[in-house]
Image (cartoon, rainbow, N blue to C red; front, side, top):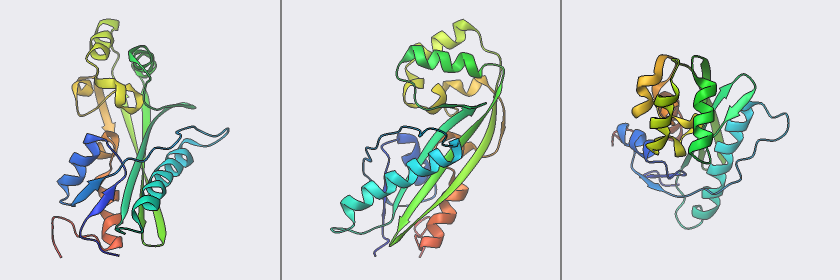
Length: 197
């Protein structure tokens, strides 16, 4: 299997940007899967499963013609027993921000890499405390459109950075692709970082 580039099973511009940071050539492929949590499925198992499924879906499409490693990720925001994915609309985003306001939540990002005949997954877990926010702040943020494609209804790398009081863990993991874990997976697979051989 050649490793001159990898496939990124994500159309997220943030994941593409983070992967460029570590100098990995890649091609984007979409991975359409049903993102439904099974009854009783723990949040950690849920994001691991989704990341692995995304990698497998893309691998099935590209392996015959151009077999290269396939990288995928999935992120969820967890507060108590509740798992927040991407909000369906601005109203749901605002509901999420109300729930997160003044509280600490977990951000789970699972990364999966299909390399040859096997798929390996790793999990990054971070804690984020969101300061108490006002209805006016939340409304203005939701009207910006920024929360709509982000787990938990906020982007730490964007306007919502001003809501984040404390972060313990991986900043890149909260953005959507933990680079420490991703680089380790790619290195084990023999993928060069920063163009080195």
